Length: 280
Image (cartoon, rainbow, N blue to C red; front, side, top):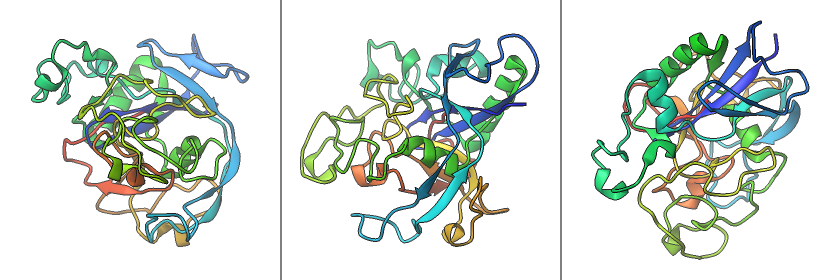
């Protein structure tokens, strides 16, 4: 069976990415399909197999000590959600909308008179994201899962080697992040600061047609977090440490400085707090 990875983002602080393994049945993506849309309107794009350098070079500005560069091979192509999982899509599967930035959420004043159904869902724990994947799997007759940290960075980079898939500079004109000039990267340049999530795909996607990989909401990955894992991880399809206390987060969010949204930037949190969003 061919593996399909679907990325689902949930907003505010944490998010997640899910993958799926199709079973036999109707509407299964074909081997040469580049895009697939499921029954709740999630658009999935094919990410080709390939090799890349994970982590950041020692001279990258604001790099973390745990970002040791190492070669990684993604040995099978997979499908990834082109957009963050929206509030509307999450509610179709889970029957509720936990989002802070919604008509009934605690942040409703910041999105007053807006239809937030196309905003990424947020206030979702890692456990919630996994449960969403399970229920979506049953509906779609495919196995949806969160992406590994390696799959996430590979899909985010989309063949690039710079700090961002857009290049060496980043500010809030390129993604939904903190818009104050000191929060930019590469050169001080202020921009819009919405102080909330925005609808998915408001900004240009990368070469793989994946959107909002920098900013809007952080995204959950399947892996346990390990500060030293890169030093001994497998070269092919690494799955993360066997155990841990926190799960990996990637991508940064709407209040983040650009440095936290870099391709290689790593974050982590407990799997149970209801803080962020996710991608399948």
